[in-house]
Figure 1 (cartoon, rainbow, N blue to C red):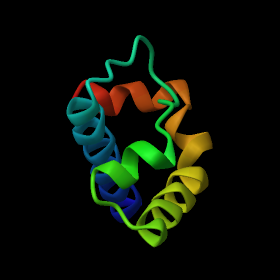
Figure 2 (cartoon, rainbow, N blue to C red):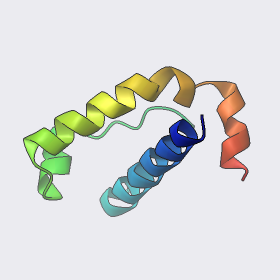
Figure 3 (spheres, helix red, strand yellow):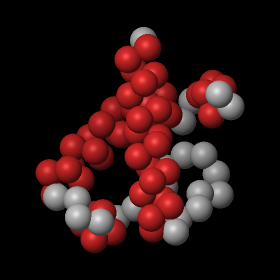
Length: 74
């Protein structure tokens, strides 16, 4: 369980870095629309984009669970 929580935190941190770089400020918790073109502009390869989307999609249900807000307060 700890490894899953660590992976979720790492992914959240990655999303925040992408948001900051692109000037995106999320008005709510949940999905942030970032296109493949924007990620490619950051130097991400198509493989990196696909792998990251795959990882995030596997965690989507947990990510959007209201109980996860407790981790945001840590």
